[in-house]
Amino acid sequence: MHVPDGFIAPHVYIPAYLIDIGLLFYSFDRFKRSLAEGAVPYLASLSALYFILMSITLPLPGGTSVHAFGVASISLLFGPWTAFLSISLILFLQATIFGQGGITSFPINSLSVAFLGSFCAHYTHIITKSLLRDDISLFLSGFSSTLISALAVALVLGVHPYLFKDTFGKPLYFPFGFGIVIPALLLPHILVGIGEGMLTLIVVKALRNKL
Image 1 (cartoon, rainbow, N blue to C red):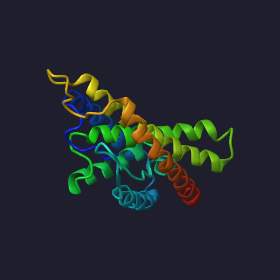
Image 2: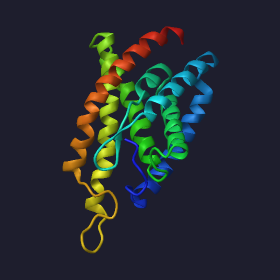
Image 3: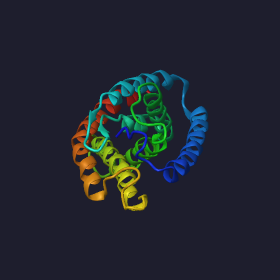
Image 4: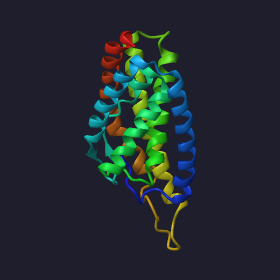
């Protein structure tokens, strides 16, 4: 889901940057006030681990990619705002240092993967933990966060050929509509979501009593 430059119209990424920057400043303020000092090494270690995992990508047709996330476990252990900040930093470093994802598409990646993924995991766990076994609740948090992120990216990309065309009707940016991009992103991410659910289950159960 590292969306490259050239796929997102400035009509989309400029407002997205404004929203993303505002949310990141807010999350950083909450991070400074709420995170316990003893939890910092755990957060740093997990962020480094997920930086590596998110750098291992499998290209998908149309120019995007599939990769692990790690957002759910950070969200459940440290809170969604901290996870949003951490995963956004990872995405920014990957885009600027390794060219995985574009600078213009960064706010889309940040809002879709880091923001929506973090809060989806957080609220999925809140809703399901009193109804289901703890293991299932943790698994669903990781699984759902992956699919909601993939769907958000697919919707942003898929709307482009309908909104942004030249005088001959040719798409100016991302060329594939919803009928192609939604299944192309969601179907592979079902498998990723299963892995993400298992990763969330293992990491959260291993670390939550230490924080």
